[in-house]
Image 1 (cartoon, rainbow, N blue to C red):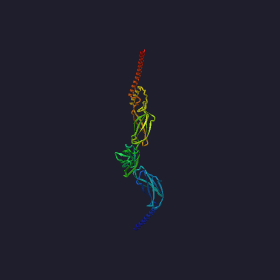
Image 2 (image 1 turned 120 degrees about the vertical axis):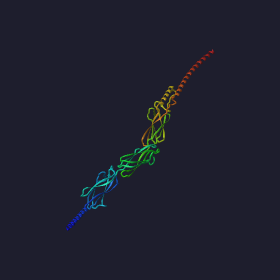
Image 3 (image 1 turned 45 degrees about the vertical axis):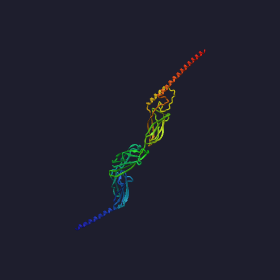
Image 4 (image 1 turned 135 degrees about the horizontal axis):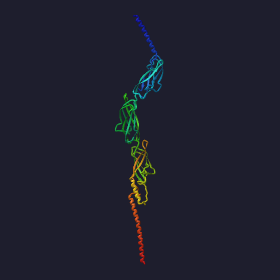
Length: 439
């Protein structure tokens, strides 16, 4: 019994000594540990850069010399601001709690990463020890973004126009409960048949949706560029995070216009045309020209410069226009002598009858600059009413009048001659009778 007690005492003494030696070794050896302090932002978004702050401490009693920490460039993370390997030097014993080293990294997240937690890996070592690997979970949210495109950049004032907005999910996460609206602060552009708000229940990654409106630009709106205010709200499918986008797009009010050309009058060889701006936009640097054509020719200049012509305004331009092969028309200055014979009147009548069946549409081209600065051309056909001059004897009545006049004029001459002959004959005979009686 005494022997058992003796051995128990000896064993207890050895145990106490061993524990003491082990504790002495632990308290004099270094023990480096690395942990994650925080990430900013949290969660980080795909494609963004996140700040990673690490805490490096030595919980052992001994000094840790030549401490090195290396961040692993493994998908979806990559170090962007400094070397992945950092040398911290020596960490003294019990360098814990508030007495530790802070290490920061800027890490870029791949733009195509999916939503969730991803492993950020690093390793560290110090003198007398091999590399030790640690892994931390980093919260990553998929990129949530939508793009808005306006498919029409120009509106005609006073004209109902189709306006389309295209919303595209350009992020890495599906979107839901989208609400889109637009406005123009001056009220120059307004939707018709609906309000300015559209709703989209779900929009998958990479998909687009067309939002169609019927709009009208104010007919009295000054031509120029107007700003549309665009607003889009949506939720992420993964975490129901609400995001709002406010942006703007430009839209132009103005553009082309139209003209009307009408025959005005013709005097002394000058043919006048009335040109009016019948569209809803002003026209700048307006000019009118008469191109070459089969039925007409222009003497002198074939173009006239008007200048600027506001909507609703008109002006008059004149040209010296003749009909090809017929001479002037509608008051053109043709001179004939009064000694024309009856055949001239007949030919004129035939020519007038033949011309009446020909095309009397005069082609006119209007060149102008629209409110967008683009040069444009408008072609018009002007109906001209033709007639020949009253001085030419071209009508049938004049021909007959000339014929009758020539007829009577000829017989009068003969009657006078006959009367003169008869008078001379009788005068001579009377003289002979008188002379006979005197004898």
